[in-house]
Length: 401
Image 1: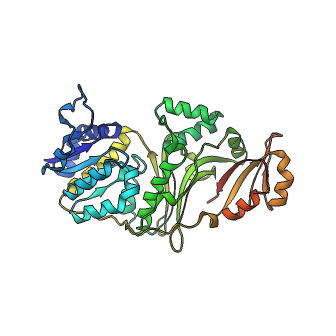
Image 2: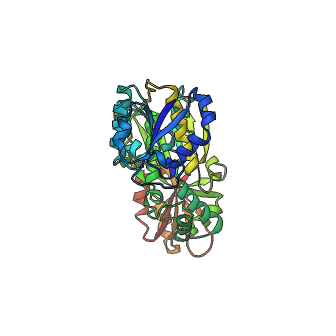
Image 3: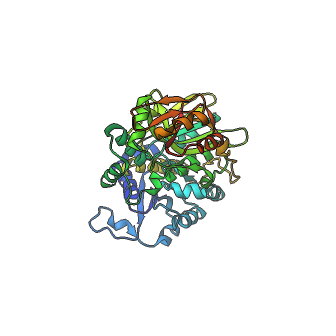
């Protein structure tokens, strides 16, 4: 019997225990051995919980127990998750995690530590919840040079934007509803400002290129400035507004961006609504692929963690290599990236717009304001031209790929 431990008994951690217990017979058949949770580490006690007898409060019990060969880290954050993870790997215990912040911050180091100690470090659940994306990139797409990744990687923001689009509700109203339903945290900053999606695209880009992406260097914008008025304009040109995380190879690195985009109704990501996530991947041989499903949630995320547990169980005593070097990937200057832009401005600015921009596609919905879409230009050129306008109400990038 293979013994495992779970660090953190919150939403995901309890889900991992539930999946391992409920599907134990099926998992045993697929592994060739049973997997049992021996310890659950948490600061709290859980009286009445069916697994309360497994709860402990001392991490050293786990790291010093030679019977424990697999550890599931579902604590979140980097402290104490980083030290606990490293100590487990140094002890030769494979670690599976859903912790995107830890993976994005320390991925290369922890992968090297696992390699040095003949164990593995897996993190399928750190991106996309229950959507299988990391393992397909490492296995099914191993022959490919992945050229581009474009995704809706945050369920909270996608839920908010979907409700705004369908119901005409304003941002603050939908955010409160999302918080009441548990889709958004009381402090929603990591989601609505794009930081969560930023860490996820950093992880995927690191796997795409094999080099480390510093998420702090990715230009990131959130959805807090999007209004119902913007959706009226988007609808007028048969587009929707989505928070996209985009990574594309360049000659010497990659260009990365997290920001709201207008996308056409014929784009596959247009139909990804509510709390669902999707990742659109382009390989140089296979072409375009899309991975779609629940990007968060207790059992969806737990299922991804347990998939990693099964892989660990099948490869005990060895390291499964993942190409992600510590060498930092060169990220292209966002100022040099080319794209179209949607601009909404006061009616009084129409003359200034015509002086600053050429070849625009003008959109008029009524006499409150007016909008237009620019021709393709660099971010730097757009920033220079938009300075000529005094009353700019909204700017959203346009994706037509």
